[in-house]
Length: 306
Image 1 (tube, one colour):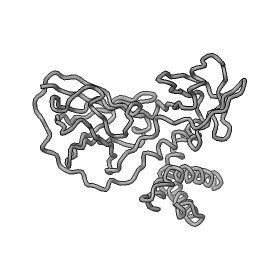
Image 2 (spheres, helix red, strand yellow):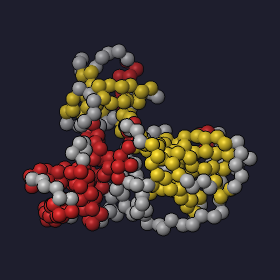
Image 3 (cartoon, helix red, strand yellow):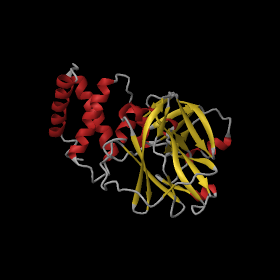
Image 4 (cartoon, helix red, strand yellow):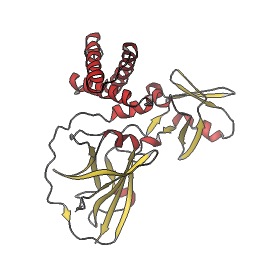
């Protein structure tokens, strides 16, 4: 990471951006503006990957160039959306997707469905059937639709949903079929059905280059709160950039959800009004989460009983 944020590397990124914007995109920008954009994006990337020792300098520079390009192709790109997009440009997969053959079933009966949501999934990319009182011995499965954040369709023509069963990987190719303001609907023509060998559905998403897609945060834990007679200061530490352009936040408090207007941002604190209406809300606020609904993904999974 030190090499990435070094002045020498910043000069190389600046030179590459100038060539990309002027020669390929034919976009004229001021050097001061470009320098400011690059500095901001480098900060976001370094925050994201500071603990990732496997990511190399070339990958980090490519992520930076890609997001500079996105910035100048979309002048309305805000800080939060930029952070979301960066988080989805992840490292290439280390394993080649293998062929599948052993877990496909051809019989369809008693078609039902359930939802795998990133908001309710405590273990990322693993879903436990026991939460639905389903036994893997009695059912078979087929992914149906995906409901994905809007920004995915802006940067990817299609994505793959991969189901891991022991040493095999079953891959379903999805394209966007319906666009909405926040989430889009994605469908697949792959219709094979599979069985599991245990009660866990292990899955991942990959892009057209077989890069793993790690969706951005759907929940942010509240670090600390400070309360006076008028205002509540909610500390979210390094995640404050997610809220720079938001008008309100959704707080999950004891399984209840509260919509609160953002009055301002002070350092790493979100400022909301202290309305003295709900004592239970105040008492449990320090152990609550802020929900980022716009980052949520959903898998609609069909299942068939014998």
